[in-house]
Length: 97
Image (cartoon, rainbow, N blue to C red; front, side):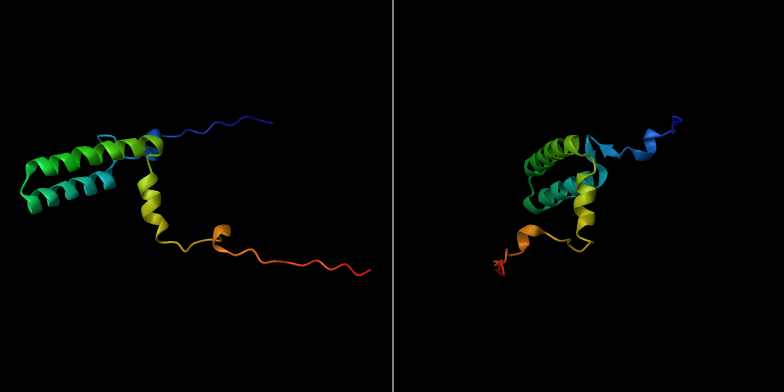
C-alpha cells in the first residue's frame, strides 16, 4: 500500500481568535461590557464584565476553539433521537409451550 501525504494549510483551518477568544464571542463580550457601561454609567462594571468574559472565553476556547460556533449553529438543526427523552415500555414475552 502506498503512503500518501496531503498538504494542510493551518491558516485555513485555524479559528480566528482575539485575546484567546473566538472572534464572535469576543464581539459579544465587548458589546455586553459596553452596554453595561452605558446602562450603569460605571466604567468599573464594564471593565469587570470585559475581563471576566475574556477569562471565561479563554478557558472555553482552550478546550475547544469552535465551541461557540457549534453552539450557535446547533439551534438551526432539529434534534435527533435522544434515548433519555423516551419512556421504556414494559414488554412481556410469552412462550407457547
